[in-house]
Length: 211
Image (cartoon, rainbow, N blue to C red; front, side, top):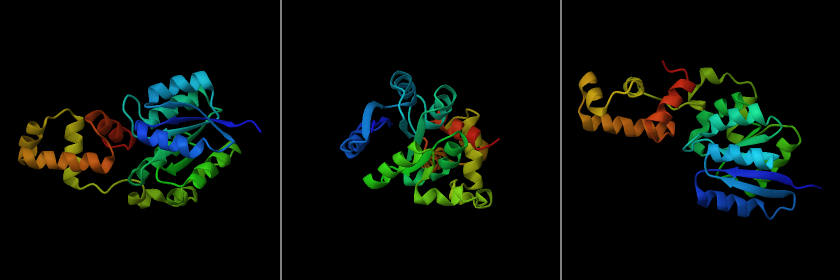
């Protein structure tokens, strides 16, 4: 049997090395490259033409959702398994929408990782247990907490202002709060959405239809 050629894409080197060590002892697996962001991943996909890409969602340079779009456009035969933290399940819908073949948590076991690879290689979809309900046709739009964090009206207001390039001081003046309180809201928003900067916040707002 020819080993499945795998690319690991995650911006955390320690996690990549751990995942490589977990998978490469399996004779049916060949780790051909490691990438630390979406741009580097696309280069490696072009060079190695892998069977499967394990793709982190939240990365610098180019995130997993944008990288997935390019892979689907240029390398439709490549299978993509999304890698995510437990509290990033809100992004599953986006990854599935743009053609991910599977979804696993970074904390999942070696056995489940191997099962995910074999499942997508056989042309099926593999989802972590936490995401199964979404593939069973449940009305996720009526249960927003399954995919999206619960945002207060104040947080939504601040998100819109941040996306419109308001500074902390300008936001404080606009909604009559202290700069310290605005900074606290901003920090909580970033944590809830799993973003690290304004660019990531804007991308999240666009992807999720926040006007």
